[in-house]
Image (cartoon, rainbow, N blue to C red):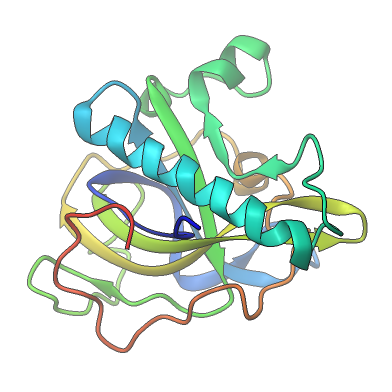
Length: 206
């Protein structure tokens, strides 16, 4: 079976809440979260998307017996989205930074480690923010909670690789993430963040 864990290349940060947890909906559970914007047309972007899609399929197969009663349901909620298709369908407003991008939403109850290129820990939104570029490790897993079924992406660790123009405005976080992260249970399917993030992230599947 293919791996459900992904180690990414360079992506752009959007709706970053990695130092302080935030509830997606009023009264909801607070979580650390971020959206990765992945270019659809670059060689590296295509490789990342392919690896993520493989991890999602692996999570479906794993969840077939563990969460879905032996059969993969149709119309599962998936946290990987095509930004251009959503704009064309009217599901969301146009945002310049999302043009030509896939958006991957990730979250975790546990605080991710955020490091720079030299593996120094970062602690402030002055250093890591929506608009900068980063790499991540994450684990995909199935959920089935109160009739809502899908594949979620559990955030592990983050490495900032470059600065970028800060992003502001646009839709709110609850519009960006929808209800993906309130419908599943965190637990044994999500990898715990290691004490020291790996120094190499050249491969997209671990």
